[in-house]
Length: 507
Image (cartoon, rainbow, N blue to C red; front, side, top):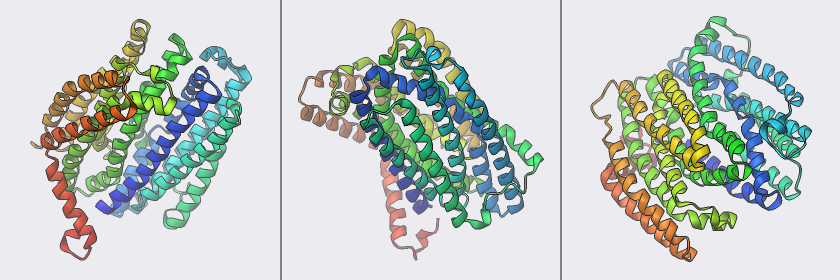
């Protein structure tokens, strides 16, 4: 089990590394070649069609989880019915969406989004972005099929290749100052190439599981719609939390504010991507253990990962908060973008999201996600309702405040679902969450003060001070979250991997 998790983690860390490269490289190129306002408009254009990602309706997630469990139980007839039925549903949805997407050329896109560019250019950019989003759904479906045969790391590798190629192509085009429509068109071409390569590779790796429409079964498709729809509701929340606020900022404050918010969110998303990669690496093992009724393994995964992710959420987010002025200087050469109060709110929000994601994964990967979907959707919907007037009166600070409240409420609500999942086992408690908030509420003001004072220091001095703060935070987390237990367990597992003939090698 540990070996599979480490392989998948390596693939996911590579993906996050590529994402980090993209987040560091592309915004700086946009600023240099197009300006801050134009970069804000690029973000708005991409956000305008992100909702198309929800056309998956959760079909991929539900089907891949369920097919993995069916495959490992040897129920191949049910497996092939679900595979064909989900493929027919998804292909029909994407085909219809592609036809309807062409209607964007009849809309005054520039006026609707308040953009400073010709209508035709804006519509073409949105069309290419939309088609890329549809192809991305197809890539996700095929790459997730690798999980069935225990080789999800290989599927993730194809997504890595797509992300890296996309970054390289966009970099070359940005240096030549190409129009937005050309940039978006290049993204679509890369997506099509990645989908073709990933599909061919899956057919080669698992020819007995070759994707097929032949065993389409309407009752199976109908039975999968409700649980898939709940996953779709979860995907829709990403639009509410990541894209709708951008559109609000564009309408109320303008493109420059969008860019300022995007830079701040990008800095902390780098940390969250790391904790998300850890959670995602556990996903196939959570699904496999739950499907096989291996409760001790599932419980061990829950508690050990909780210790690690809570620690990383605190140390890394608060360390980045203290280091933010240096990052803005090195990355964008714009130290004036740092605002202590907003960065403190963003750091706390990012840390809370990291621990929420840990609780989230155990519901998500076991198809026990119905209440989870409703909780997340309603919480973020209320956030958006509250954010609009708060942005009017308090700007970006108002948006961040509403976002933080939504994330905190979800932590406690999803914890209740985790207790139900583990049949109210006494070991699943809120004590780690209380410890988390005790540390962050004390440390965030101190790290914010350090960043504000250190903004005037030489970069090397602030970097050293931030590193010192992270060491102190790690020491506190090591004691409060009992990381010594995790260290001992990992030592035993790694020793077993190096001695595969020993009895400890069997998980």
